[in-house]
Image (cartoon, rainbow, N blue to C red; front, side):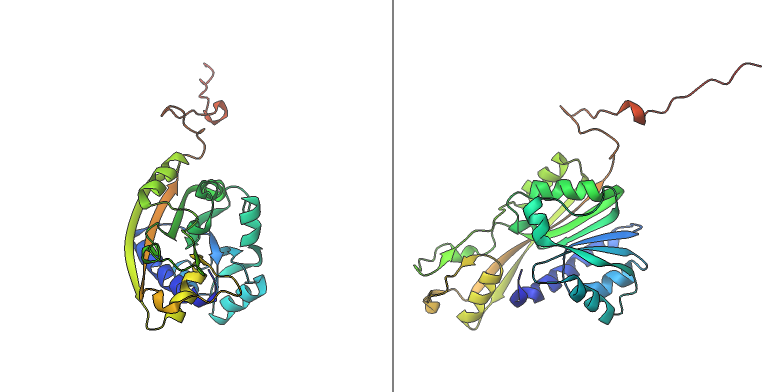
Length: 265
């Protein structure tokens, strides 16, 4: 995401938090990925007082900017002064966070930009504690469907990098050992009075590669844009179990307690 589409991040974050209203979860450590200076920080601070937050900051946002944003919003929680950049995760496939260290992963509009979301799910499983929750949103494959029929030589249109619908994601969560996944989807339609605004948004959403010398025929662009927004959450349960094979879960011998008989009198 880039600055022109910040309003969308804020709106989707608000909807994610509304969906969390029915979830009971004691959160001491929270991971936000990608972290950005949005309005949702106020709600998170009130919802989870005295939580420690860990940031995987989106590109262009420094740890100082995040610290300042949280301080200006009267962030009432304890938060880390250091942040790991999102670019580090996308290049390495790993969060710079220890195993079993957070109770909640909050991920807003990231997965559609990942080449293989399975790596993201595995990292979330790794850093979540037993009983922790992953909650996320991303853009589904119907996003920008109005653009697919366009034939404008100066525009290089792209599909989202990860074309997973909510059924694909539900299956992937189960495959990565998450429990009780809940998936939801909605369509948002954006209407535009000026084609320049549409061009800016589809570029910010990574649906377009526009070269520096390109001069697209703006009159050929549609006046609306469809966003398919997918929401989901799932629990990290049974982390002491080995990964199931053939629908059978295996328990390490070290996890089995040994009961001893008291000595006879």
